[in-house]
Each structure stands twice: as structure tokens, then as C-alpha cells.
View 1 (cartoon, rainbow, N blue to C red):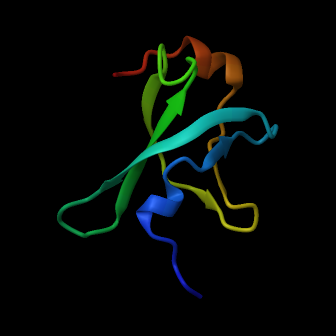
View 2 (view 1 turned 45 degrees about the vertical axis):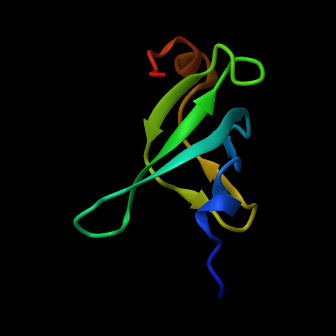
View 3 (view 1 turned 60 degrees about the horizontal axis):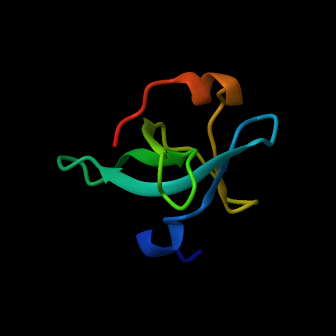
Amino acid sequence: MPRPGADRLIGSDNCNSEDEDLGGLKEIVLDSQSGQVACAGLSFGGILEMGEKLFAVPWRRDTANKRFVLDVDLDRLSSAPGFD
């Protein structure tokens, strides 16, 4: 099965187990020692990248639906501190 390049994954949707939209994939962080994906950079909130927060989250891809899943409540993510 062909694997998508990073450029195809960036911008992919993220959701939680309640199927609520949690934003898009902004970055993929690699472990320089192993070469494996260490975590994903989730972009959440804001409009046209203004006011958005970034979060480093565990890498868990739902390949059947071509999206990423993060088991976190939408309200908790909204109030969580992120980074620029």
C-alpha cells in the first residue's frame, strides 16, 4: 500500500471520538534518532490562521477515513494552553 507524503497529510482533518472537528494537521514531528513520527502538530481555533493555537499531540491516524483522531473533549481543547 503506498504511503502518503507529508505534504498530503498536512491539512488533514482531526476529530475526537465524538466526531467533533478539532482542526487540522499543521506539522509532523519526527524523532531524529529513530526516524519515526514522534507527534503531530494540531492547529485549532482562529480564523485564517489568526488566533489559532498549536498543540503537540500523539500520532494516531484513522486511515479508513483519512483523518487523525485525538481523544479529547472539544471544551477541554478550547481552554487548553497551546503555543504559537
